[in-house]
Every structure is written in C-alpha cells, then in structure tokens.
Image (cartoon, rainbow, N blue to C red; front, top):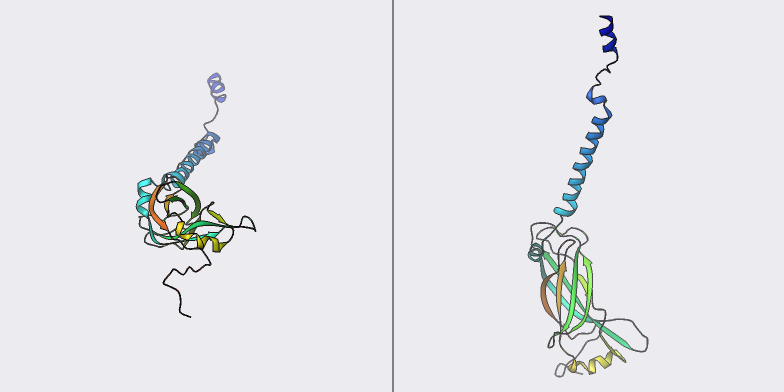
Length: 199
C-alpha cells in the first residue's frame, strides 16, 4: 500500500482553470479579436458608401460662379474660374469628409481648361441638412496685362462650364451635375451696352 501512495504523490494537483495562464491568454486573444472585428466594421464596413448611395445622398441646392484673381506676377493679371455651392444631404446617413472635384471645361469643344479640388463637410452633415458654402477654384485661367483688358475682350471669351464630382472616403467619383460659369470678374462691375446709368 505504501508503494501505491508513493506513486500518487508524484502526480501534480489539478489547478483551477481561472488560475491557469493559458486560460487568460486565450481570453485576451478572443477579446483582441472581437475588438479588431468591431474596429474593422466601424471604420471600413459602416463608413463605406457605394457610388450609388453617395450620388443619392448629395444634392447641389445653390450655386454661384465668378472669375477670381490668382496672384502670379505683378506686371500681369491672371484670373481663374471658381464655383461656390451648397449641398443638401438627401441620404439616410450623415455625410462627412466628402471631397469635391470641379473640372472646368470649354463648353463647345469639351476641352479641359483647369480643375480644382476641395475636401469639405468636415463635421457630420445629418440627413436633410444643408451645408455651408463650398468654394472651389481652378489652378489655371486667363492672363492679360490688366483686369480692364479682360473686360474689353469679354465678347471673345469662350463659354466655360464646370463638371462637379463628389467622392467620399471609400467611394469612387460621382458626377453631381454640370453648370455654366458666368462671365463675371470678382471686384469688377461690367456695364453692358444699353445698361449705362444716366448722368
């Protein structure tokens, strides 16, 4: 009998599962896995917006256009087209970090004149809300000796229009619309023939 007792003395005692380091390592691994899945869902799945959803969620509700100064050289005037607009969230989810690419093209030929980009809607825009003004200007435009020289040559200006594209963090670009750029220069009031003010 004493020999049997000595055999059982060498067997290790069973440790409770909650005191086992492998148990806690497994729990930690599972918790990290769940956290990573949640983070992936929050940042990728939930924030992902398809092109179709983006197109249905962004509507331009007001716009204006004007040619603005671009300071390049002191001995000449350079003006570039600009487009200012507001959007309305017509979707079911808030909009945030939407970029707008404006491509300014010659109306007759469709040739690109210039383009401009801005990332807007930095704070969430809830469904049904209208944004503040979003301003985009082109990089290139027309050069002349002075602003009055543009006015003299205005009848020869080729009509320009702008194609406005939107892009969310995970979507492609979607066309929101095409709008004409007015023949107006910032800071100059143009008086056409027959509109002169009486002396």
